[in-house]
Image (tube, rainbow, N blue to C red; front, side, top):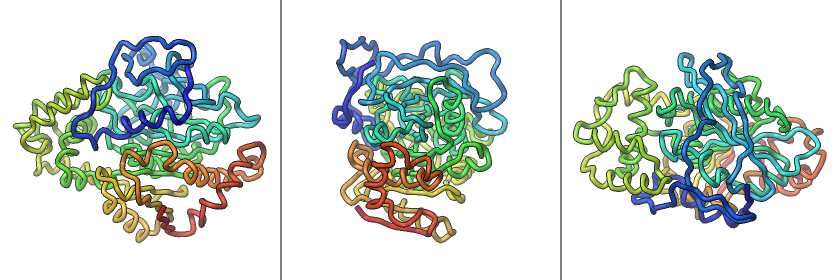
Length: 437
């Protein structure tokens, strides 16, 4: 294992923030991945799925059960962090059991007490397990504020999202399944030896993960009341999937295949052959089985297939698909303190869409904070340094509100006190608070 400072992550984060905004992804390094020299930083690459990901023949019925864990090896981790991967049980809905892998990160010098948890939900990387972040040589890429998280004494639990079968899709932009995987990852991580996690959990997510974070806030009280959410932060979340696809042709060609494949797998009333235009079926099926970033050859093939599509991917008159897309709008109440973050220069998730979502949720009585960053787009909003200070301060204030006396001990309190007063603003439960940065 090697470590890298946050600055060495900055360029790579822009590469992997969200492929949907890139029409022709640049080729990146593929397998095999060499072992690094002592202290070297590995090139960004994807590894092959190995036996760790194979579930046991007989699965425990209880979601959130830890099946196995192992320290991360031959990867580059952020400075001040150690890491593991875990395999655990989860479910996609009440009828579909699944397993998932998550990566767990904790400070190399853990605090004396238990560590609050950041449940991280990542942006789009692909539909299949081979595309997921736990297989990257930089498995923490895309997670904001890594250095500050380490200094604060917090842990990170980052799900890959769940899989009902080894070669199948994950429930892409299906809120219930994404949310359950994040909540069960926290439950499973609590069972690890040598990692002492606190009950307090904050959910962060970007892009697809922003949608998943909102759904985690919706689902948690019903599905996992034992996972106490201190707050939910959704960064550039796609809140109106149908509108997003109809207003951005390039985005529709990239994400439409993932949606058609996932929805056809997990919704019995959605058929892939009806959800996709006949002339687009062949290319769509192939795109759905390719990764958006890594290996580089798959990203290049995806770009070529997108260029070959003369029409849109999804059928305009497929009523079951339209109904299911509407069903996955994150438009239900979230009990935990809620933060929505948007870049004003975002061309993937339009700011007007997030503005409309915030207005609708505020009109429905949902307390929240809404931050708009004037100079940031869909990729740069996830770049190290863009959100670090205010996001960590907001989260520290939420953790402190839960158990102020326990949080007041140690260096984490010193950090929180210095920044929370400047950035936390009005309490998240006091109504709708809007800020422009």
